[in-house]
Image (cartoon, rainbow, N blue to C red; front, side, top):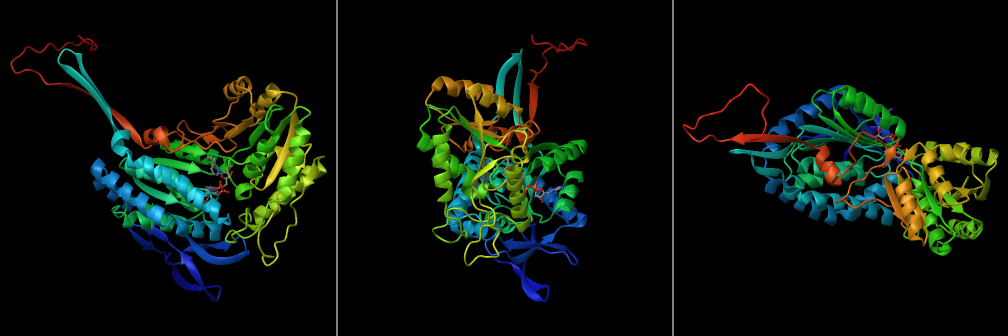
Length: 510
Ligand code: NAD
């Protein structure tokens, strides 16, 4: 991808700019933030951090574009999305490379992320059927009633570092398909994928100003939350920020969906296949270095057979190949920043100090040739209790906490005591236990022998409790509903000269 070159700290440093009205925009005197390659620890670019004035400019451009885009035909929008689908597919490896270099995840994982985002573009291609309304003939004598949905106007999306392409694609394809214009504020840690997506959308024929990218930090977010020209906010990130976003943006009269953090438990019953359960626990705890909102971070082993599963987990965790994301044999890359590594290692240490047993300890891992990289090795902490910090806090790193439960009911009670409710999984061969589990847990997304149950694009994604603030899940049918509002039209076409029976009484059907 293209980027502006410019002097920074005395050396030439790539600058990642905003994308507004179909072109790169810079601001003189702008604040900047560092973008690093987590595998080497080196800063590779600087990203501009928007001011209030820059956000205002983006909203004005998006508002102007919204006038004609809302009038565009469904076929026109659908054609752009089909073209975008082809382009994202053709550039899948470019996107994966950009993600790998700024986020650190391994290439195969980055490809998977783009693929899951593509599914939402594919769903949005069907917008003509997604926004079909209802029609009722003759609801009263000579009166018909129909409903349809219209766009909101300018909507904004604020996204986290851990899925720099997929989470934006959870939002903007449906927002623009339904006739809105969109301002994306990606994470300042890995901002390049958003610019590449915006360029591809332009190449696909999306009119300038319909999809804009504002780079920035909390300043840009606050400006979007307060701006009267923004009708709705989609947010994905940590719980503390999600709660704040929801409160502030709803107070400003906006529609808000704010998805927060997670603490996902996977329960293994004695009747589960221990080999299958252990391999899925390891894959879901350590894939993407545990930096997934649907990662399993707590294994709940039920009954005395738990030790056999734990032995397998320990063996497989030690065998995970940790290295730079671009190395073909790496299975797990670094975490996002040195600060994240420190926080994760501190939480492991606190767990050990509070009585947990480090069956596998990933602290202090050094990858030869990548000594400056932000690596933490897979870590398995046994004998964790619900009182420990490592259990109560979202670690968001490659750490699997292991707790024990007597039976499925105790496991359900443990999950329901957590303030989070994003995802959970059960490993079992009992249909009766599975049914009791999925009906009993207060969690939004549940897997039965499936550890990362991210719903496909034609369902919707969302957690319960502190994992989602607002009442609409993201993408799928709830996404269509979030980005549109309904109108109901009651129509009478009176026959000329026919007596009209107006009455001051409240109208009822005849
Ligand atoms: P984060 O909350 O730090 O940042 C998310 C976004 O909010 C970024 O764009 C950031 O610039 C902005 N932001 C950060 N602090 C802010 C503040 N004080 N005021 C306003 N805006 C602010 O999250 P992150 O570290 O980028 O991502 C990891 C978190 O996201 C984890 O908690 C993870 O569970 C969560 N997540 C949740 C889901 C989900 O679907 N529920 C999906 C992915 C990630």
